[in-house]
Image (tube, rainbow, N blue to C red):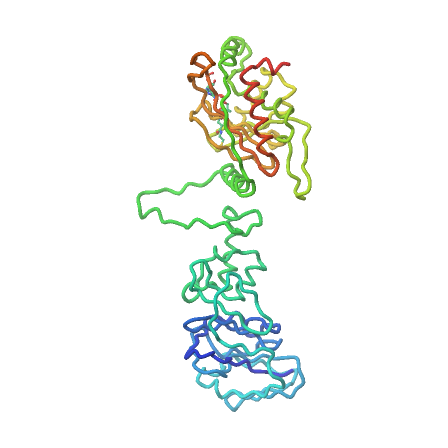
Length: 458
Ligand code: CAO
C-alpha cells in the first residue's frame, strides 16, 4: 500500500478556481478516472478524475475553497502499489506502506494553508493530467478516459451539470432537465439526482412507466394561498388510479380522434315505443344499449379495433370476444364496468346489465371481475351535454367511442332540409394498432347501424 497525492492540475489560464463539489468521502474506494473533485472557474467547470484507483484516506480541501495555483494537494489516495511512495504532511506525518497503517484523522487534516507543504513522491505520473480550459458545451458530453470533460451553462437549452452527474443521470435514466440544481448557481449535483429519484419513487404520479419521469416536464408546485382561500382534499383511490391510467395512456398512445354524426331519428322513435315495456321490466331504455350493441357488431366486422398490442412490440393480440366497457360517472370518480359478449345479447339484456352495473358502480360495489376484460369502451356524456369531446383510449384497448348529446338539426335530404336527430360520435384510437382507414370503416359502419337499427338484427 502506498499513499499518493492528487493535486490541482494546470488551471488553463484561470486566476482562480473554486472547489464546488466533492462527490467522494474519506474511506471511499475509487476507480481510475472516477470523479473526485469538481472545480469551477469563471467560465468552466472541470471534474477532476482520480489518477489512481484506491481508497480515499484524506480530503484536503472543502467545498467553497478557492485555489489560485496548480499543484495544490487535494486528496490522499491509498493505492495498491509497491511501498516506495512516501508522503509527508506538514513535515510530521510519514505515510508508509504498512498494511496496518491507520487512516490519517480527518479532524487533524492540514488546513488549506498548509497544503502546499504536503510532499509526495509518486512512483509514476498519474494517467491523466487534466487542464481547466473552457470549451463549448455539448448537450450530453461523454466522459473521456484521459481528460476531464468540460461543461458550461451558457446556453438556455443546456443543463448545468458536469460529466459525472450526466453520466450518473444516464445510468439511472434520469432526464436532467427535470432536476432542480442545488449547487452553486443552480448547478445539478449528484445529491440532486438521488433526491429526484427518491421523489419519483414516493410520488410516481409524475413519473412515466419507467418510474423515473423520462422526458416529462414536471409541473411546478404553486402556493395557491398567495391568490386566495384554498383547501387541500384527499384524492380517492379511484381518482388516483384514474389519474395514473390516463397519464399512462396519454403518454404511451399516439391518439387519433375522428368524428361523425349518426342520424338516430328512427332509433329514437323506436326507443319511445319501448318505454312502457321498459317500465314493466324495470329497465330504463336509453340510447346507450343500442350504442353498445352497434359497437359490438361494428367490432366484429372490423376486428382491427378489437385487438391489443403485444408487449414484445412484434405481435397483435386479436380478441375473438366482444366485451365492452362503459364509463360510469360516480361520486367517487370514473369507473368502467364491462359488459360481456355484447354481440350475443339483445337490447333488453344489455339495458338491464347497464342499469345493474351503473348502480353497482355508484354504490361502490363493483368487483374487480366486473371491470376486467374489456375490448373497447363507450363513454357517453349524452345525458350530461356537450357537442363533442376527444376520449382517451383505455389501454390496453386500442379504441374508445365518445358519445355526446343528440340534438335535432336540419339535414338536407337531396330535396329539402328536414329535422333529424343527430348523435355526435368521436372515435379515438391507438394509431399503432389502428389506421385511419380502419377507424373510418368502423365509424361508417357504426353510423349505419345506429341510423338503421334493422342492421342490428340482420
Ligand atoms: N343524447 C341525448 N340524450 C341522451 C343521450 C344522448 N347521447 N344519452 C342518454 N340520453 C338521455 C337518456 O335517454 C335519458 O333520458 P330519458 O329518460 O328521457 O330517456 C337521460 O339522458 C339520462 O340517461 P342516464 O344517464 O340515466 O342513462 P344513460 O344510459 O344515458 O347513461 C351511463 C348511463 C352509466 C353511461 C351514464 O349514467 C353515465 O355515467 N355517463 C357518464 C359517463 C362518463 O362520465 N364519461 C366520461 C368519461 S371520461 O371522463
